Image 1 (cartoon, rainbow, N blue to C red):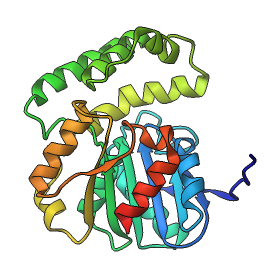
Image 2: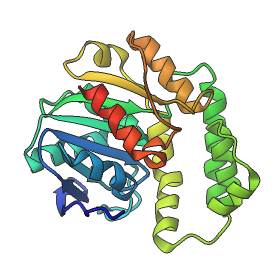
Image 3: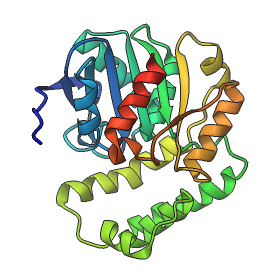
Image 4: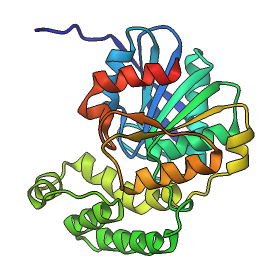
Length: 274
């Protein structure tokens, strides 16, 4: 069986302190898909499916992949990434948009909801890794600082093991070795270093404004993978949903369900948006 490639328009947008790579597919109501630290490529299968009835905007987050910073040592914060998303939506001119953010991108879209620009009507925060909404935040902070120190000391594999432990993700050792034991490509190495050195603290230590999210004009949905039970992002999503007084929306798969089964994830996303 062959599939027809979905036409993609790529572009670059100059924003304060950075130049962003973005991609647009399809036509119709605008859906934006964002992650951090994953780049636009992670959403390609999902974006291709959604492009059948939506305009779909994806982007590399600042400092990652093809989105270049004027100062490579500038930290990435949810507020900066939220401003980038708002500028991209305004640039493509197809808003107001629904925005799905996954992992660190989920924190970005929560910051976007707090800013509440008229360009966005719905944000779906799929598994944000928020330490500050959890009772064990102090232990998580300490673990994150050890992990960052391990990575910067040159122990890549050890840092990723600590990452998985912090995230409450159980993975067989052979899978850990397969994913993190080899030599990364130059771009992967650069993205990893930026993640550990400049993105983890700003993202995971960010404290959401519950009142602004609960009472603001933007619809806020907390998404959780059906297979993520007990993991850090499951716990954080449920804790924030409880504070907002909303029920989480369950999505197929795990933390990266949009990669595992894009078709099922697209169906669920359409249902949540609908």
